Length: 278
Ligand code: FES
Image (cartoon, rainbow, N blue to C red; front, side, top):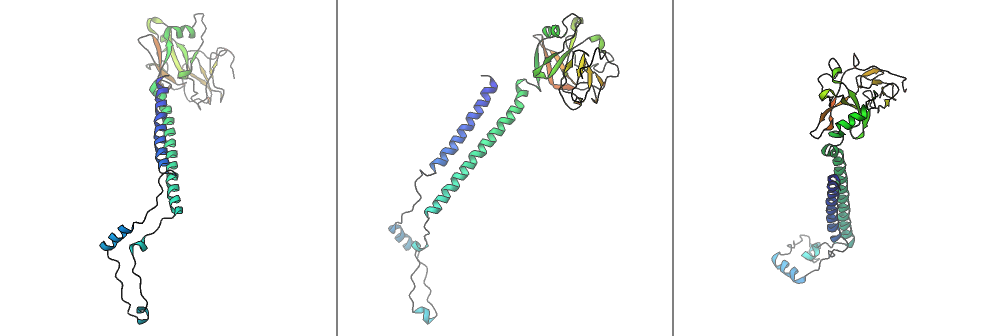
């Protein structure tokens, strides 16, 4: 079990414990709780009567009323009994609120987990952060096998196409001075990582082997193997990610650093080199 699974499992466990606690409280105060029924204590009433004098009986002014005796109002008269129905309503209210509380806790817990899942890739190294694509030498050998052909390699976790780039082609290009090429040390062919997302409206752009480029199936934008704009509604070259090589010789794609470049005025590689795929 990796750290992500452990963390999410711990969150769920905490949510379950909290929910169980709320439910336990609701249950104790529910049907099994002692009934709220009061017993009248005559001795206590006597004590109360001696402490608190009954209301003074006002002598009626009218002769007609004066003939009728008035019973003094006692504390017992003022005591309002609580009906079983009222008790039921109170208990029902409490249970309703407990249920609402449980629902709220569950909802907030689910929301929290969703938010965590949203930001978690950035914490653990998925898309949006640095992605280790593999050993630079192995990737270069796959992209440029040595027979003169070019085979872009797709890195799913980075949503990127790896394509070759010669250092000698950089001066005067739209990528000059940008950290978009890695692995050119010692005169080797370097690599660039092109974001698969079309810069027009965001469709995924597949490679086209026959034309030696990338051609968007949505509205027909076309780019060469360096991701330079050729035709179509795309406003610029394909975006690319910053690259670096770590101490272990791995190519690291920084998918949190997207580099945009304007439409290439002079292409660094010819396009098309064969029939289009569209
Ligand atoms: S989304 Fe690619 S050309 Fe429109």
